[in-house]
Image (tube, rainbow, N blue to C red; front, side):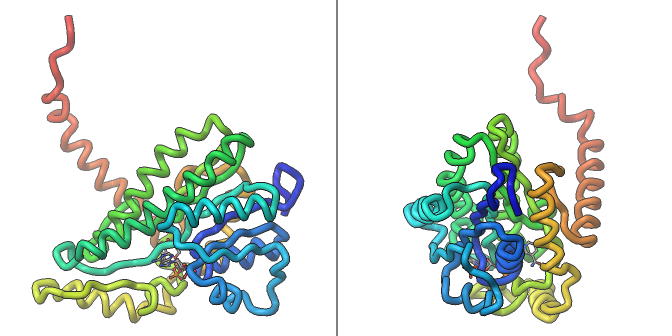
Length: 287
Ligand SMILES: NC(=O)c1ccc[n+]([C@@H]2O[C@H](COP(=O)([O-])OP(=O)(O)OC[C@H]3O[C@@H](n4cnc5c(N)ncnc54)[C@H](OP(=O)(O)O)[C@@H]3O)[C@@H](O)[C@H]2O)c1
C-alpha cells in the first residue's frame, strides 16, 4: 500500500468503467491506495465497482480525455483531493477492425484522439508534478499490436505504434527526473475489448476483403474465451510499478510473448538482409 513517500500511493487511471481499468481500480482500492479514476461515465464506474468496494479513497472523474482543459482539471482535482500524484496509467482504448481502405477519416481521427491526443493531454498535465517531486511512474497500456501488426488491425496498430514511440522517447527523457515509464503489451485478455460494445467497425465495408469479415466474426466469437485473465493482468501491472524496476516493455500473456518473439526474428532477418546495402547512401567519410 505505502509508496516510498510512506503514505498510500496516489494513482491516476484512465478508462476505468470496464475491463483492465476497472480491475486496476478494484485492486488498488483493496490495497488501500488512493485512486483518481477517469471514465466517460462516473455512474457506470460506481455501478461496476458495486457496494462491496470501499470507495473512500476513490475520486471518480467524468472526463473527456480528448479535451485538454478537462484533463488538466482532473489532475488538479486529484492533487487537491489526495495531496499529490505518484502513478499515472494511460489505459483507455478500444479496438477497430477493418481493412485500411475501409477505414474512414473520422475513424482515424477518433482512434488517435483517444490513443494519442488523450494520452498526451494526461502527460502534459501530470509530468510537471512528477518532475518537480523527482519521482513517479507512467504506465502506458499499449498492446502486442503496438509491436507487430496484422491485417485488419491497421488503425489500432497505428495508434499503439504511435503510443510506443511516444513512450520510448519519454522514458529516456524523464529518467533523470526519477520518473519510470512502462509500456504494457497485453495479448488477448478476457475484458469487454472484443464485445460489440467496445470493438468499433467501419461504416462501409468492401466486398474485396472477405478474410477481414471472417476475422470480425471470429473475434466477436472469441469474446469470453480469451487467454488473458484481467485479474492477473492488473496484478502484474501493479507489481511491476511497486517493484520500481522491470524492463521498459511489460509483455502480458504467452500469446503476446510469442508474437513479440516472431516480430524480433523477422526484424533481425530484415536487418541482416540490408546490412550491406544500408551504408551505400552515406556520404564518403571525411578525409
Ligand atoms: N483486452 C485485450 O485483448 C487487449 C489487448 C491488448 C491491449 N488492450 C488494451 O488495454 C486497454 C484496456 O482495454 P480493455 O481490454 O480493458 O477493454 P474494455 O473492457 O473495452 O475497456 C476499455 C476501457 O477504455 C475506455 N474507452 C474505450 N473507448 C473509449 C473512448 N472512445 N474514449 C475514452 N475511453 C474509452 C473505457 O472507459 P470508460 O467507458 O470508462 O470511459 C473502458 O473502461 C486498452 O488500451 C486496450 O487497447 C486490450
